[in-house]
Image (cartoon, rainbow, N blue to C red; front, side, top):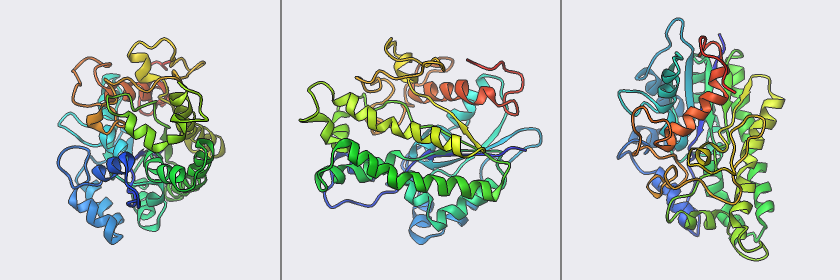
Length: 343
């Protein structure tokens, strides 16, 4: 049976000497659990004490278990994974809701930890947790990388005085080897597991979110970047996360490539974006629509409070999981045996 471990992007970041909007957003994700999407006390203690494997075992034991005849999906990563893949309600995760809407069948569990980075998940305690989860998974869905940017990019610009492209190089020089460690650990634990994930959509469209984008890549919003090119500059660097997934899929046969690029812009009616698999792209000069990337979700998590039953385009979490189904799950016959492949 194929196993895919789902890793979403939630990263634990160290406090920088010069905190700003990006670091503030990161610290909020590391706060103890107050509602869905915040880290709980048990996870916090596990991270601090290096006992992530035992925490993962306990967490998985209290969630949905594999069932005969249904593929089992494990979601791993950061707060992004937690928001869309965690068992947030009696209706299950947004991932599972999207699959059910298309008559697909799977069980799922989530060990995402908000505030974590690729460096966290590539460390020995986290890798042990990853291997434990992979042993019972058919698919592992991985979301990571966003918190790495929040952690590393502001200081790269302020202290190291590098260009946006140079800082992007620095980000991926650290994150990519970490991701490969995670992927290879999954495969070593269960060679039948299929790993999948994607590099986000364009985000940060909510009112007030500009302070975060200008903190992550301040070089994009001042000279020598031409006036009016700030969003394009920032999107250029963030799109490299999707390119990393493409490269990983080309270098690891057990990785199933996916993309949700353009999903929220298309849902909001932006004709300069496209989710056509033969011409997928975002509107480079805009951020994600405010409706789907609000300040209340730290600007880089898809919205959940405005979800309406039966309306796929009502909230960000539903839009991105619908696109994930379209681009990846609809093509997995083990999960969606009766659905036509969506193109």
